[in-house]
Image (cartoon, rainbow, N blue to C red; front, top):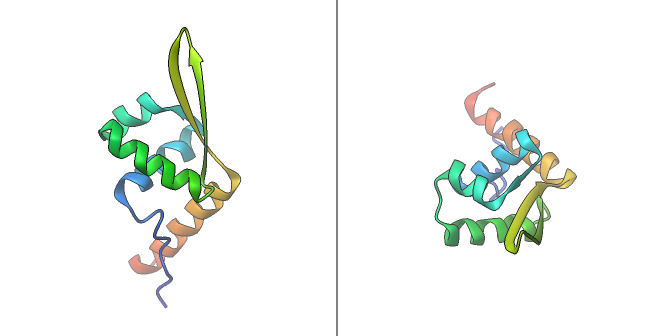
Length: 94
């Protein structure tokens, strides 16, 4: 009856990052940090976990001599997020 929830997405901060990226497709690290109210260190760790799972792509470059890290949701990430939401709905009886 109840479906297993993806442990990668079941973390509050990782789920928040994915929720943001599902709506905007791509965002820079600062935007995500501000929207999630996370510390840079914690966000960095969680972004790395999402990247290792193949759910997001991380691009690091420079803009006007300042580092710029951009995160983009992958097709695999979209599928995982949609499946997570669907499985979560089974807990809610929907």
